[in-house]
Length: 267
Length: 267
Image (cartoon, rainbow over all chains, first blue to last red; front, top):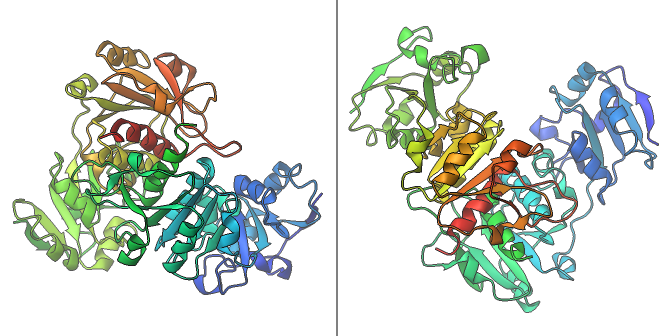
């Protein structure tokens, strides 16, 4: 069981990992920061407890401490219990969700390790919005995507907001950078992945007709700019979602969900 | 062309329609409020200008005024031009998007009028989150849904945040309440709509196998509680999205998008 330790003062150094979460230059949960991952709220904290990310401490109000007691039974870590006001002073803003857990960031994984046994992977380029990225991970988890691979220009999947919007699935769906871009996409092809680039181009193949093989890599760009020419050229085929004329493209996470759905719709 | 009128003081009564947008009890864009609809940002304002909602005034900074000059060519309405600080004082917060347009709310439409010529409609129950509702409208517009019908407990599609998240499509996709719930669903059936209730129940039919007729009404409940028993009983069939075990259900707007997508995927 986690050890409950009361924190009465916002200057208590034991809760430094949770300090000033909004001050961009001091964010502990950003790359180049203190190398930490923050889970926020009961649902996401629970998911962290079930994930490979082992939290080393929690900070929360008494109510959340009691709610999580069973989940924390096997964790020999401190739960810093604080009144809501003290917690707000530490964190730097009032946190409705009342509980945070913190874990260390692991080193980046080798993307080729994630391909073993994988049949569907998402490959992102320039998806630089934390909420879209979080939603993408939630959709990936829900629809059976095996891994998310990152080309350049993507947001941080372990940033607090990404993790929250993902409902904690950013902690569970494996991800890794593709260091050599877009050449690394060739590795996927050599491993037998059909590389399908999602595109709004009306001359692209309808999504429903694009899938031909047992292994698929779905290449997705950001809303607005979309994929670069170089990334597009690295794909085997371009696929489009049938869209109504005169509308904006769908949100990138929603478009991705439809491609993920195509992979499971017959199951 | 809109008439550009400079506003130098935040107390100027000409911009009262834009005042204190965040103060819940005084929100001009809520039902029971002043009966107004607020569009925010260049993209959404443009969409309002193309919609049946005819704005009667705009408030914005000089840069936005110039950006919208062409769009406003046929509108004989005032553009209240104000410095960003004055605008922030009027609105009650700093508005990054720099421009607002305001229109009057039209009376609610009769839902049976929206069925003529419609082949796909969404029917919502308890979708009480403005962002989810906005996302639903964006997806509806992108994927060719003809109308959105509201059972009880839904958020306001014309609330500023819904409109913004919808990218303005809440102003374009027709919507109406179904006053008699769930009996009104029977009207849809009598008009030849197959009523498909989306459900996470693993015994439901896979979404891909659920559609059998030319006219479809997709019945969607809120994330978490889902549809009520009564609404579920009013449907012809229950359909599920094939989901990975142990994950949360998808966001309701994303689940809806998949159902909408099924209607257009072969087109």
